[in-house]
Length: 433
Image (tube, rainbow, N blue to C red):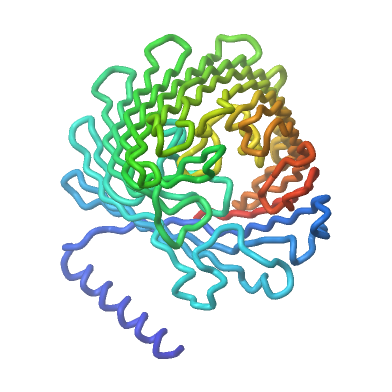
């Protein structure tokens, strides 16, 4: 240990002396975050005996991310991110597994580290080109975006170009070959699409995306995205995604009124004899209305509908991580219920108390069709109670989720296969530096 400290000190002195002697290097800006994340649940499955807080029914992570960013001059910038995901020994007596993995229970400390970002960007007039492992935002890439519901966001191996030459318009072109996945940051893999009959299918080829976001219409932001998915599951099945989102909001509207409209289609090629019965397009639409009737209070009502063909293979309206959905009715855990052959209504209220944080209550109910991912005609309901607060620079999040599905439905997310009701408690704390 002393040798390591001494070596680090000598290296630091050498670097400082070199920098003082001649300014030939680059300045690296260091930022990051530290987080702890714990989740436990209790379901009514007959095949298991679960209870809130028990070791067998709890998962957790302790994590640290370090960002190293630099200006390489001449319009070039560099970014990287090193992620540590461990448990701090919580698996010894408090939890039985991890929320998110970088091979954290392997016993090999090297395997607890992941290179979650590394990219180079170049600014050319009004165009930015960014190549490498990076986050992609949901607002511009609704079917290949970095999800924030776990400990740390997943990232993608991609090349993107962002252009702002057209007034009030952002154009984004992207080539996405894969990514780290939302649950496993230690390895990279293909993009994933979810189907009702065949489960998860890998996109063995690449995804090409084109997005246009325009704000020239008064009070409106309109975003249109198109994806081409190449070689799904290695059987030569390709697919396209078309998606439109329009948000209407203005300070001039009464009571903070906001209206959102979304809709689109996933169209896989009809594989004919390759897939029994072939495939069918999946279409979806949604609407949401938000109000702020009094200071600190925000209300939202949303409705989404996704169709399904009982006789053909259907692709769910999901992110290509295979987990969350871009639909307005997405809550903490209901993605499988809402993403295919489903009509969903969601109501939400959020009250910001100021220094004492924000309290959020939201409820959704889903009427399921025969192709629903939770089971044929297995209706689903979820209630989430969330509390968020910032104290001394630390963000705290606590939530209670109650889920119910018709008998024979499959909820997943830790719940037993025969469970009809599940209670989940989630807590995390995060410090950004």
